[in-house]
Image (cartoon, rainbow, N blue to C red):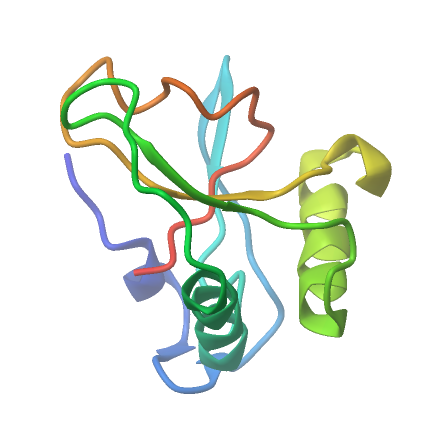
Length: 127
């Protein structure tokens, strides 16, 4: 079943959440949660701008696999630092255990979307 998790809470595409952030447990083992409005529209634009500001080779390890676009420096900008702190709270990690954040384009073939980008504690969809 596919659900638009944004529809579960009050959502404004330009402003993000109108209330407190909410987390929905989709699965407990492995832990899989959804958090609508995790990042504001402005934060998403900022992250996308960081990817576009530094040209990177777009080599995928596997055809139609995940492509690494950029590895962010820890606390690279104030916005990145805010997102890192928010991720740390949601994932129950110390912030330094999240570093470095990677900006990737997810693969489109089942089984190849997790190749070549390292370990993950969280995935944030920017669409």
